[in-house]
Length: 272
Image 1 (cartoon, rainbow, N blue to C red):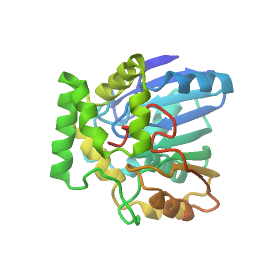
Image 2: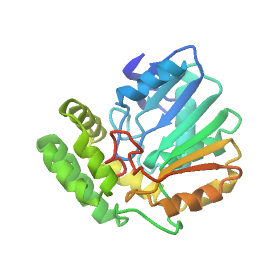
Image 3: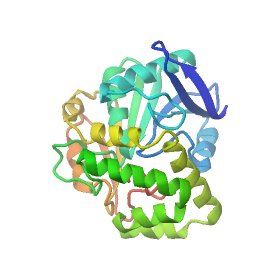
């Protein structure tokens, strides 16, 4: 158990992952946000332990210490997830995706339906045909410039990174960020810095993928699904999440009027 382990997939690529909680309990696969990494909040790992769950958090291709996969698509991810869980001897599992990880959780629920017990989506990134969109640029050149700037600031000037993303945040998320102590901020910075360990390519790829045309997967998601969304969220607008949840058969949507993108966590810059 711990933050960094490695598995070699059938095609030879290496996947880095964190493994927390009860190794004998039911497994939850966590699809991290964009840009995030396997270095999750200790409160999350403590919750997994209290609940008796095993929490497996892989770096997606090109993030952290996972090998890149040039030209990857959203539907490539379920095969990677299955390869990782096969190597760990895991059969059925639940999947959770927050922010930029939401579409990847949806893809697992559709493509690996025989293995997925349930799906949880937390402020999930919206596809291109959603009725509202957040502040992240959708143009590849603008994404490249933003990603490279973020990578440089995280390396050389972490305060500058937060100054870059803070103006785009909702009031709720900005207040949450300002309330964090230095120890927590240092840990969050380490998590973001790890996401950019290999540069900005994965950041650009991920936003183009999750902001693309994948809404056709939503009516095909037949696993029990719950969705949580903060009403004061500039990253993923609540109207987009309402629209998304309406298209998933039987999905249960919980809207939190006093929450933003962080939903009370310390990763409010995710999907930045």
